[in-house]
Image 1: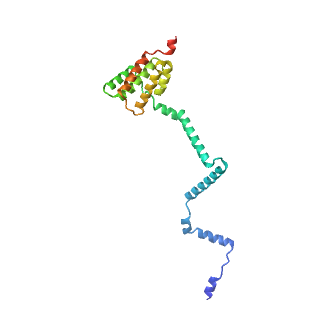
Image 2: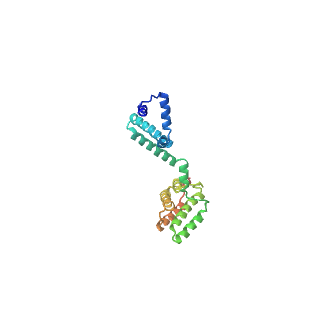
Length: 213
């Protein structure tokens, strides 16, 4: 009876002792195992801050968070377009679509290679070499400078200013070259013949500056 009476008597523990015993209890293995990892706590903190930020934006910006997301998307698109139009991305893209890869040959060598390819039915190679012959011939006549990395479109536009009579066929030839060489579109005999005619037309055409003199 005495033992039962003693166990039922409430124990009066002061605040400091209670805090100490609580700390000891929470430091036990069971509580430590149930405690979330530091990574989980960090993730929860980030999510909490992000949600708080989004709530503030939603209440402060007209249109709410959807308007902000739309603005961010537009800005990203603008930045990408600018980077493609100028800077390293543009330089890389242009150099990847250049007319000449490596050392230039004489226009006659490109022309001969084109004719040999056409004779064996390889019109893909024939188109590539014939357009290169066109551009190389214009460079040899000093109508185009020997600029590395020049694309087919750039060559057609620059030469077309001095040779307006063949400006349209030049642009068509540049598109054909890009379609075959970079687009993987099979060339045809008719396409090669059109480049042969372009080559002859460019060789006969007189620059407007010289004709005016």
